[in-house]
Structures are given as structure tokens and as C-alpha cells.
Image (cartoon, rainbow, N blue to C red; front, top):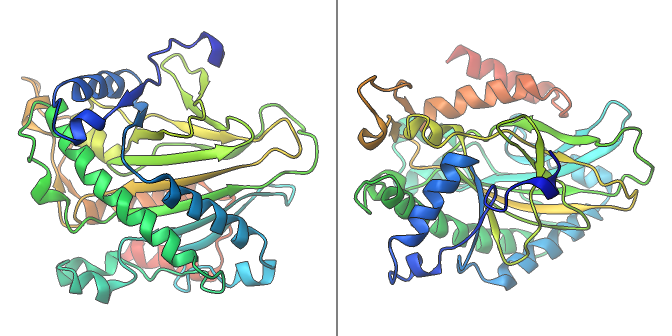
Length: 342
């Protein structure tokens, strides 16, 4: 199956404006439930995230990509956390697949505690690493990230309605949220592909509740695996955010909303490039994810309860074991060894 043969509703575009402004609390939740059940992926318009915030982060990502390699190498996590600072994804031939800058809601454990995160869970927030020599980078990313965190909380209200729960069901479980953001830049390869398609971000599930992604570039690189095992390209819609379910949402819905495997491929054009701005939305770090009553039938729950804190540690270890192409280093090995001891 090619992308042109995919049914139009496999990755639908859903306007959520009427839900967000309170004028229609039925249509978007119904459409979201259908998409979450059928594919786990959809796009939303009417989300209210200002275009200027998105444009500003894209501009700063270009500035960062043009800094010297020596400077970029200095931006790795000092403690080896795989989802903090800048990580370079390199293939077996030494070609840079992508540059990723990843940051968490709180800059460190002290900031998390000051915001109300229980002390026993504050070490979840390993220190962020910001490229402060790129003037305005932290401010631009922070402004967009603050807005997408707000959107994530609103989408959790939409999800509650879609799952036949009270609209405010998730409210007390979300804040202070444990979300993170990621800017991925996939540079031009500069040479023809040796094979088509060439995968530059291996297939995977996201681990959290929901992912919000804006994509921009010269080609459609994000692909979703359908139920028949075929890869479907996600159209680039500049006014939309791509939404997908993570493994925690799959567990929370007792499998009703499955996490869907996806990947990124390279452009057939040697000059092809793309950038994505992603928010991985997570509830409060001490929230326990237990299958919702509205999704559990007579057979009982399919998943055991797990806290966001414990799940993230498990997910980090599993993900790093699967993605050996990432630059690890001694600091990361120490970090993973510390996780293994917990």
C-alpha cells in the first residue's frame, strides 16, 4: 500500500477550535476517538498555537545547526541523560542523520520542587542543557513549549470526553506536568541514497501519553505503520499539529487507543531536509496510570498500574538499548547503570 492508496481518514485532519472555545464539546472528541482507535495518528487545526512562536523556533534551530561542531559537542547532557541537551544521530557510514535538542519542563530538580513536584520524584528532572550562545534560543523554545503544554492539558480534557469520562477527569493528574520538548533537524545528506527508503530515525513507539509535532521541510519524511504493516507518509500541513498516542495512553485506555509505530526516512533529493518541533506531553510525574474504568470490560484490565516516574525510567533504558546508533559516551553509560540499580 502506498500513501496515495491510504484512505483519507487514516490520518485525518481534525479542527479542535470549537472544542477549545467551548462551543462544541462533541464533534472533535468523537473524531479523535475514531482516529485514535483506527490509526493512533491524526492532525489538528484550530489549536491556537501562534504561528510566530513556531516560526521563531524554526529560525533558531537553523542558527544552532550552523554553529561549529565543537560547540554542538559541548551541549550533551553532563550526566549522560539521553533526553537532555543535544544528541547527534549518526549512521554506520558516519553521516549525520539528525541533530536533536531535548529539554524538560523544569530545568533541574530544584526547579521542579519549587513548582510543587514532591521531593521523592524531583530527580526525574535531570538538568537541561541550553545552547545559550545562540541568542534568543532558550526564550523562543520556552515560549512555544509553554504554549504547547497548555494545549496538552486542553487536549487531555478533549480526551476525557472522547473516553466517556468527566471533562475534568485528568485535570488533577496533569499538573505540574512532566512534559518535554524536542527540536529535530534532519540535514541534507549531500549524496544519493544507497537504498530507498533510507531510514534516518528507526521505527518506534513514543512512550508518553500524547505527542504534538509540527513539521516543516522539503519532503514528507514521517511515516506511520498501518495495520497491514505498510508505511504511510504523514502529509505536511503547515497550519496543523500531528498528534499521536504514546504507550502510556495505550495503557491508560486499556489498549483501546494503541500506540502506533512510526519512523523517519531520508529524502531522495540529496539536498532534502526537514525539521520537527515536538512536545511529548506527560502528566504529573507521580501520577499512576491505571486503565480507565470506561475502557475495561468483563475480562479486566490488560495492563498493570505504573507511575509516570517508574515508566519513564523503564522507557529510557528500553529505548537506549534499541537505538545504539546514538552517541552515548561514558556519562550516558553511567546514567543507565544508575537506572539499572533502582
